[in-house]
Image 1 (cartoon, rainbow, N blue to C red):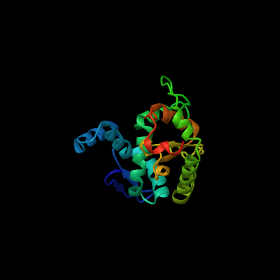
Image 2: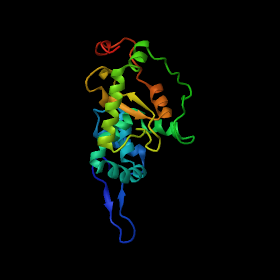
Image 3: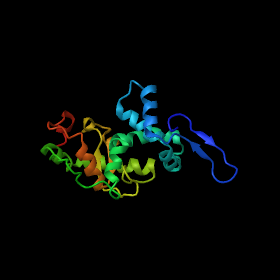
Image 4: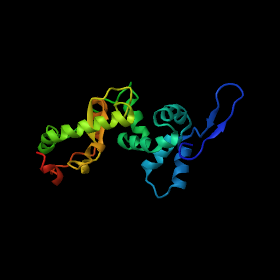
Length: 202
């Protein structure tokens, strides 16, 4: 399993394979009984990262990108937090590729004036530059965080509580426009009142 150890079935002919449950409901039940203090979203994340077909698909990519599956666990969880549960992602991509620009039934709220001004400030330009340098140095490049096959087009604040702070650039996540729209529609929303740390920059 992604979280513990998969049973490795050695093969005389062909590739070795990992023996992991293919039943999502069984994996969710396992997570609920072993992690009762965690919420339902965690149980769904556990099932996603432990599911047989998913692990077989993700293991080579994660090991190649992060060096090992263990090193990939936290980034993978952060990615799931940003896109919602695996079923949310499946619903978004079921009808061909990228999530829709405007998910049906969800109305995207307008941005507060202070946030729009801040995003045009020299300070935010500097944060974007530092984030770009960070991803280039430590990730070997910059692509959409939801789907690496999509080109990077826009940064998204993953934590509005860090706006105006010295480490704000660490909370800028790269997306393509379509994935960014889907993430923004699901929330959380930009706070309506300007944070104290931002006032000095606009």
